Image (tube, rainbow, N blue to C red; front, side, top):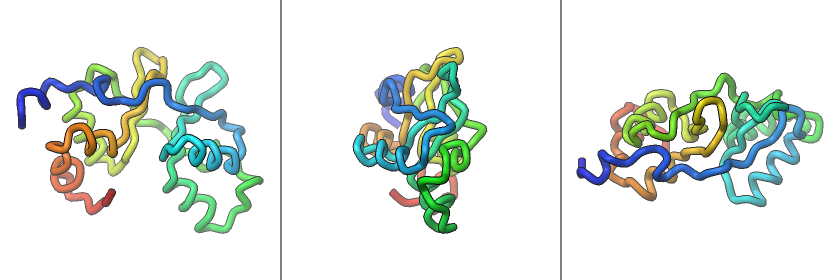
Length: 146
């Protein structure tokens, strides 16, 4: 692993100020927000702005479409994944990639203290630190694809 890569931290490639929704946001709005912003996930936050869950494209497919729920009647709290696995912005990027691989997840909310400050997506790692691809997809024994 290159010296440059070993020095990378989550904050170096995270997306700052991730898009959030409330637990009561209709799933139709969640899907529209994701589509309009070209993103694969949104963070669900409580009334104080604390992250309480995450909704990914896969959640929408598995928990709404595949089970034939009517999207307009489903709320974010009904399909979000929780509790969240969150990381600190100063965590080494390779450690965050290992968490993603071990847990089989593609997005990690980034918090400083209790404040949501960013999100790290596996596609960011693949794009900006391709040397970690093996860790994400091979090292974990995971058969996940892009």
